[in-house]
Length: 474
Image 1 (cartoon, rainbow, N blue to C red):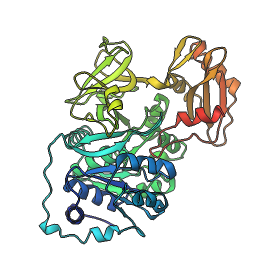
Image 2: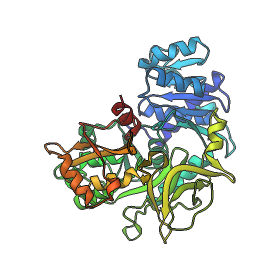
Image 3: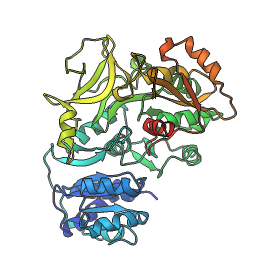
C-alpha cells in the first residue's frame, strides 16, 4: 500500500479532529504501542496536530513491563493491538486509561479516521513545549521518559537530513521500531522532512529485508551493528544491496573491524553519528570520505556544544577521557514525572550528562570509549569493555561478542567475554586468550569465556549486558 503526503496529512487531520471531539486537549498524554505501520505515523501526527503529547512505547512490552510504563506515563488514550487488552484492561478499569483504541477495545483506528479533516486546524504550540515522550532503552535499569520538544525534534530532523544529503528521490528502509529515537527521529521524521519515501517493515527479518532491497527501490539503509554483523555473513553482499547508496549505523558504536569489513565488501561507508534518546544527534561522522574518521563518531553537529568533564563537573582539556556532556536545542527538557533523575542528569547551565566516556582528538572529532556504568574495575585497574570487544572482533571465527564484569573474590571483578561463533566456525577460548594477550594489557584479557548461540537484545537491537550478568550470576 502506498500513501501520499497529501493523504497522510488528511488522515492525520481526521484523527486529530476525532481526538479533539473526544476531549483531548493540548498537553494531554496520548499513547502509541503498536508495531511500525502507516497507521502509527498517521496517529502520531494526528496527536501532534491536537497539541497533545505522543507517548511512544515499544510494541514488544508485555505484562508488568507494559503496565508499569503506562501507569507512569499516564496517557488518556492509547493506540495499541488487541494482544495488549489483557494487560491494559485493568488499567482502564482502575482509571489510568480512558480509552483503548484497538480491535476489541473501545474503538478502532478506522473510527478515528471518520473525523472531518476539512474543519480542523492544527493547534499551535510553543517551540519548547513537549511533543513526544520516548522511554529510554532500559539497558541499565528502569526506563525513564525523555521529554522531547517540538523544537528539538525539528532541529534533529533538519540536522540529520542535512548531514545525510537527503533528497526527495531517496527511499529509506525502516525496520527499527518507531518508539525508539533512531526509528522515530532519525529515520521517520528526517525522511518525511526531506520529502523522501519510507518503506516500512514491522521488525527486522533478514529474508524480508533482502527481498525489499532486491526490488531496487531502497537507496538508504539504517541498522544497528548487530544487523551489519548478520549481513556480513552473506555471500555476494554488494550485489544483494542493489541500489543502496548510503548506509548508517547507530544504537551502539560499530566495532572498527566490522566497519572495515563492510567497506571492503560493499564499497559503502557505514556512517555513524552519536546521539541518545535524550539528545539526538550530538555528532555526525561525515558523508564525504575525505572528512570521515574511522573509529570516531564524528564532530559536533552545528548548533550543538560538547564538553568532556570529570566526575566533579570540571571541563577537561583535549586528549583527556571523561564524560561527554551536551548542550543544545536537541537536549530533552527532563524526564517525565521524575525530577530526581532530571536533576542527576544535568550540570548547571543546561549541560546534559550522557553517561558515556569520550575523548576529543586534536581536530575536534569525538571518540567513544565506553559507558561509565559498564566500566570494569579488576584488581584496581580500569577496563572499558569496548576496547576488549574491539580486539575480540578481530578474531575471524567470532560473529558477535559482549564483555562484562562479574563479581570476583580475588579481583573484585573479573572480565568475562560472551562470544557468538560464526556459523560453522569453532571458537577455542585458549586460542582467543593467546590472541588477546598480543593486543591487550594482561589485566584487560578476559578470565572467563562463555560461548553462546545468541546475545540478548532489546527491540532496537542493543545488546542487554545486564541480562548476561543476571543469567551468569544465578
